[in-house]
Length: 399
Image (tube, rainbow, N blue to C red; front, side, top):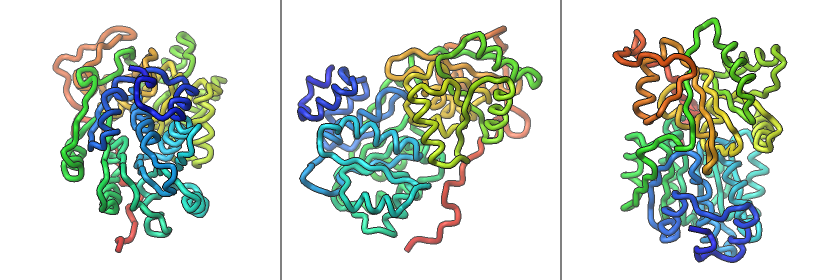
């Protein structure tokens, strides 16, 4: 189906045409009529399937431009995703008077308050900063008619469930709730059951968790040849653009230093960097001014790097969801991509579980391992997953 077949405002269609959007993706086609029909909804779809636009298009379409109030609230887990959302909405709304804006930590709250006072129709927010504004500004959510919870599973992993419930408690009036998530763990299902009213559940490509146009390659390494294996792969494949994932900031910085010593051009990004630098790096990567980006999982959730040809898991990902979201940075919106994962002998049990649960058809770079009768690591099986404590462990009790 094409966007021109929908009953969209001419200025919205003009914006879609300007950014080259012609055909709806499956998730957009299945969700659009229900969002416009003000139905509560849970949408689960493979990463890179166009979920951001699936939400943004109907929101821009439904905004009453004459009402200078926040009419749609989108809650996201990270600053980068909030900026991406606003960028997408701004492009779609380019020829309208719809005003989107993002609020997030690490940026002047006074500037954000000033912008909100001048009028915002669609507010994209991270949980912590939104709650700060609720308590310390005249921010009003009384006209919010659509509440969107995006990347809900990542919100859970980051310890934001309490903050989410607080935000929902501020929306005491009648409103539509949309929940978007690539995976659907039990706590998210419980959250949906508690706060959504007779929601429609849409699950697309549930038999194929990873994008179908994504090639999954696996290469065994040992302690002595880990970095050498990466260098040889980069020289042989010469990826157009690649994101190289590590499990920690220290590993990220260490790999970046090793690449520099080899005179291999790369940049690094992780949560310990200043927000302005992170934003600059993301923008440069999107504009294809950076070929190799060494990153922690801060770059794995929801961000659209459409032209990345490769994702390289330098460190074996901690869990199925981490693998899904990392590899989802390539093979987006119908493009082809390659995911390369390095694994050691100690990862065989997790590798076997990953291939089975994600229904992966693996390509082995070298001899295929024997995954039969693999056993978890001693001392509890899977490696420590480093669960976040959330960003506000010391917050004083709210009134």
